[in-house]
Image 1: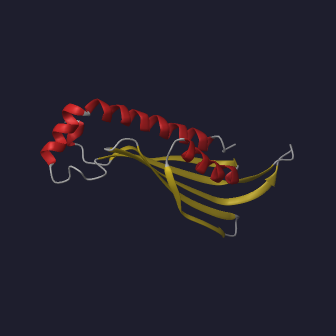
Image 2: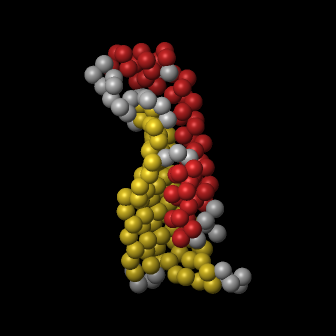
Image 3: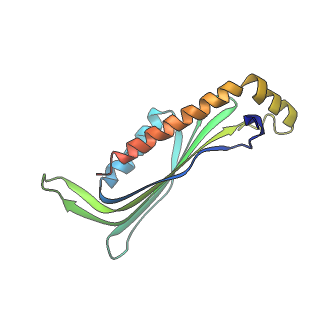
Amino acid sequence: MGLEKVPSPITVINDAQIKHHSYVDIIGLLRSLPSWFNSMGYLFFEKGLSEKDIGTGDQIESEWTAVKDVTEYIRYSIDITIVAKDLRKVVLETGEEVYWGRVLISVTAKLTKDFQKKYEEKKILRELYERFIIKEDIKKHLGKLVVESGDLISTVKSFLK
């Protein structure tokens, strides 16, 4: 089955999870996401941010969505969710203030074909276009989205100590 038969959006990374139970620079992590999305050319917004005291420490939940129209036909979208529980501020021997807690980060990346719905009513034309004209472009963009998502995951991991 060719890529023209795969329904859109194509999930490239499906809920990749990073679990961390130690020191974390949660403030630096949350501040790094907008700069990463900007540098990569994504339009992004934070869907939600909640902070609450759960008795054993603070809990912070943050959800982000980012999209990038790479061509008139292909769009990348990345969703990232950060849940940090039992956060407590601690001072390291070096004098640096960081947080300690349990962190779960989930990343999902998708490639959407025909996001403008130009070929929505013309399934045969869409399949021919994808099979014979932009087949290699779609493959190239799938790989590029994997690389960009991997870079985001590496950036996020750099704030986990």
